[in-house]
Image (cartoon, rainbow, N blue to C red; front, side, top):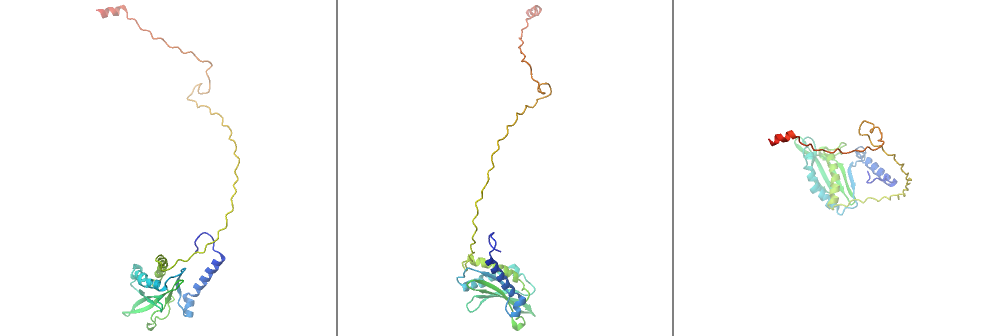
Length: 239
């Protein structure tokens, strides 16, 4: 996959197809016929300041931590990766050794060989001890091999963070200039006047139906008169 939303160019497609053809050529079925080891993992860097230092970190720091993990150390039956060593004349190769218990004796049944160069690192499957009948390269993946391959991708990013390798630079793609977008503004349409809304009726009756009073009626106020006490009641009060 490529970073970004722009589609790959023709040159990038050709490079990817060439890489796939090379990977297929190094598959277990074809590699055993040629006598070479199948490629399990490959990553590229912009540069590696010191291939020997990167290989030493993989053999001394990275590999022992992975081999002590539960996914690898929890294997109880069959072969499993046991240890890693730094080999090669320049110290740029790492061998992760698989061992298996046969007749109460440890037998080297396979290897993973990691080669570090100035442009990246490559992991391949190797054979075991030829004297004990394990000299050929296995056509099937070794136990726990998939775990190591996945962890190698993490090791590549860790190497960049630690300054042991330089991250590859992505080619900048030219983005086509965006054409100016013209917008058409529609003319505003004058809103039609809304008719007056009649007041809602408050209740039944002629006024509620819309009838109006012909003339205003005069309303008077009734005078309040004080009642004079009778003569008999005054006499009773005096008595």
